[in-house]
Image (cartoon, rainbow, N blue to C red; front, side):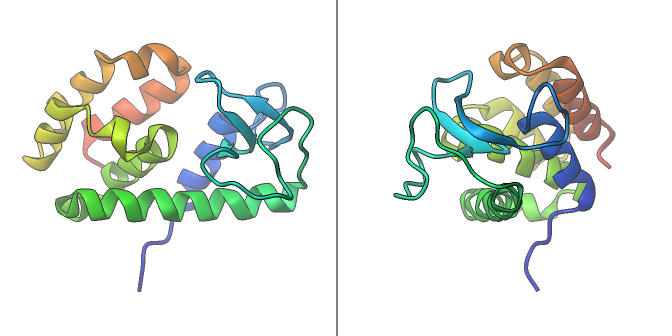
Length: 159
């Protein structure tokens, strides 16, 4: 049986990637994320996933149901890309594994690959060093403290 995202991960993504004014709810009108990418729902990248029904531009809308479908599909895709790139991650404790899935969902495998020291620490199960590397990153300075601290603490505890 394949990977199934936990309810905790899905809830965290809804909170972090959804509507900033109505926490936990999706953005039903397209917006540009901090990197300038057109997104919709719970951080669904319209540019990376072209669909004529949902063009990557201002004014594109979706339903809450579509946002939920994309959320689960995007998490599964992030996990698949992560697992293919770093098969050893399957040896991590479930909570640490899911923190890596969330990081991959948030920034993609390409950007996550630039966290060389953090990945090296994770591979040797040195969760404290991995957490310190996350804390000392541009990513941490860009995300809201509640998200960054939650992922760092989850990684540091190794559970």
